[in-house]
Amino acid sequence: MNSQPPIGEISQIRSEPGVPVIRNVNWGGLKTLYVKEVKRFFKVQLQTVWAPAITTLLFLVIFTISTGARRPVAVGGETVAFADFIAPGLIIMGMMQNAYANSSFSLLVGKIQGTIVDYLMPPLSVTELLVAIVGGAVTRAICVGGAVWLAMALWPGVHVTPHAPLAILWFGLLGAVFLALVGILTSIWAEKFDHAAAIQNFVVAPLTLLSGTFYSVDHLAPAFRAFSHANPFFYIISGFRYGFLGIADSPVTIGAIAVLVVDLVLATLCYQLLKRGWKLKN
Image (cartoon, rainbow, N blue to C red):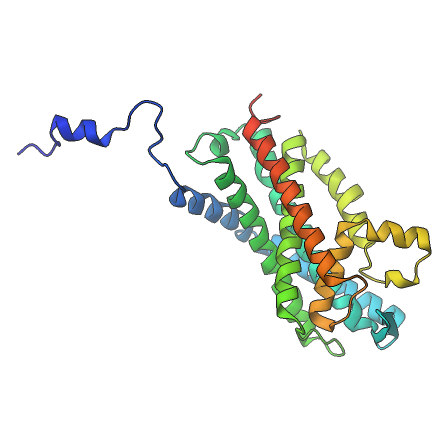
């Protein structure tokens, strides 16, 4: 018995030339690429999740021992224990740095190994490609942030009880997306791992450390305070800290809008570069 469909049915299955078969969202391809990004870092979770969590926790231990965990810090006209002050900043710092590390690796390793075609040839739109890579980076950031938060919650003398969960979710997710998009821009531009490491060491790390993670910007000189207020990392860390302490160095609403605008601008830039194939299709 012939199992082949009639010729008339074959012509109905095939689409006209130039008409895409997948006309909406390719959910299957999007899920496949996202799972690939997650499995890539989760296979070496000791290095990609637990090692960064332990490193971040060491920052807390060293600074609280050297300066005194109970030493008060003035923030927004109120005082809070130093350990409670730096804990939220360390959590979001670890999340953002690992979001950058994950997204900056994806396209770059494909360019270096000559497998970039695996990202460009599948039937995925630019938006789907961008969402999958950013989603994998945000997932890694959440894993690291959750591990750090759990360790700090069990650490004596540190209080990381959520005060405003919506602020934690907003600034945590948008902060991770921000660095994930920066990582994608870096992987598009970079030609070797040294380039990505240079952005990490000379741009991401300094801006993170100089954004009020370990100090309140209210005590800075006017020039340095102005620099901090021009730093998007400052609004992310300040807003994330507000989610735990209920106090912040900057207006939370303005910071929330500013971070959203920066993310939209970076997402648009990433979309245009990926669509043009700049430094990817050479």
